[in-house]
Length: 212
Picture: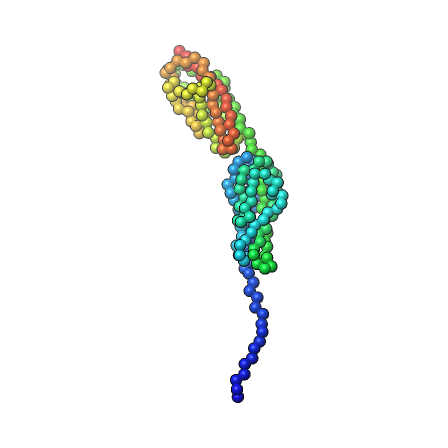
């Protein structure tokens, strides 16, 4: 019996992998006028082809911030504050029809706290050859992040505290180490400057006298 062939038709559909989103940063609090460490609130895997990220149109009202559509990264320097608000990130692939998935996160932009200094006292009077304990002429009110201190005479000259016997000045906290003054000095004005990580600065003046 001659061999017989039969054929049949079937349908094969190959589905793309689904897009899987992960909320990597559910709540982010940043500060006005401070550079943001770039972060990706929503990440995604899977899908077909290149993934594209979009975010709520409301995000465009946040001046100074940018959203990268290639990877969903937020960066920049926000120029205004924002109470906590939820945003939706949508991830789209290149399948036909396209697949989409969404993820939500909350963003808050705190106002930048102003930087100020408070004088402990305006005048210091010491006696030559009498030990002086460490002292901090100013304290800090507000500001952002790490503060850095410098000191000069009010006319801009070097403070020369060590030469007077008053010890070193700490750039980390504005503290004068103290010591035993060995040089007479009439009332002399000094200025302490402080700068924070947002670039804000403030200064205060006080005087030091070393008497016989």
